Length: 460
Image 1 (cartoon, one colour):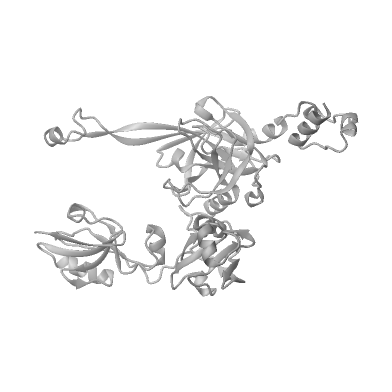
Image 2 (cartoon, rainbow, N blue to C red):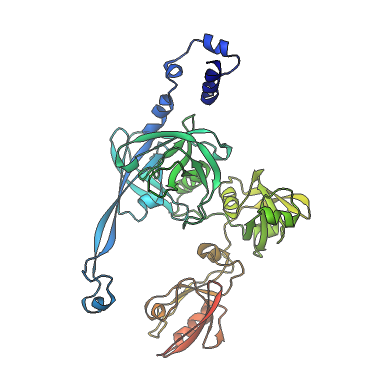
């Protein structure tokens, strides 16, 4: 019996020495008697909301849609259809700032926010980022609203108790409990490979998206966003966007601007695994190995070079590029202290936290006239363009921004880098537009697409 009481006490975080004194202690509150999460739930539930979003999506109405033979005779007509989405959100200020997931409210034409007391408000999107699945909303209310304070998600530890609050399957506001199961998780198989998650075993199901993951002080530790499941239901592996990342988006939304520009490292690096660690002479696999640096990279300016191993940012470990990006994005100051390894020696430096430079200027231009490439839009490649489009760090020249009309039909795509037109090399957008505008018939275009050289030939 004594061993059982000791085990229960350890699980619940109660005093365990000695058992006799614990038995003699009189419970000070009802919560201590019932061992309930009710105080935390009462504190946090009013700030978690249900979100109903509507969007118009094109829908095929032809009975022959998808049939290549009949479509050429009957066409492929579409009509707009209203698609509804259900999710959750978290109020993060008396001013009506609400955070949810992009996949809940992205591209929505109408957003309705319902509080736990059943009050309803219209909402509008202030800032949205599909890559990190975050959306910041604004609701207008004539009275102060309940809201959650931020926890420091970098201080979270595996094993911390957490509660997940949301509206799973539309059944109504629901609370589930669990622990922090893992930190610094990345779902590389998704389009959100830039994301950085807290993993939890608190049950998260469809409809929980955008809801709150709170700690035992009733503070926001993360925003629930995804599950790993074969059945579509919770299997004890859920993911939440860390509160420190959410805070950065909320601060940017309050300052204005429709998007947040992440800090730019100008660096390409790979995770140091066991084999690589042995080759580098490391006793443990840690950090990321720098493989390439842009000439304007702030890391290059701080003295780093290919072959160095970045170990930490402000004392916090770095094990992947996504983790490095997260550390820079959540840093409030304009510099970060980097620890790295070179030739077996640890070094430190202050690295500037900057947006990707717009140098040289992108100088956007569009091909005019009535030639085959009319309407083609091009920009000069610079660090900002590289970051926006995920180009290699050594990319340079002129990139296709838009390829409407004939330009698209002959095979040009946004993201293609134009190298030459009819054998004439292209270095600037001015040259690209001048050459393209003179075309009246066929031509040969030399371009770079996803690292491969391609030649497109077309007749007039």
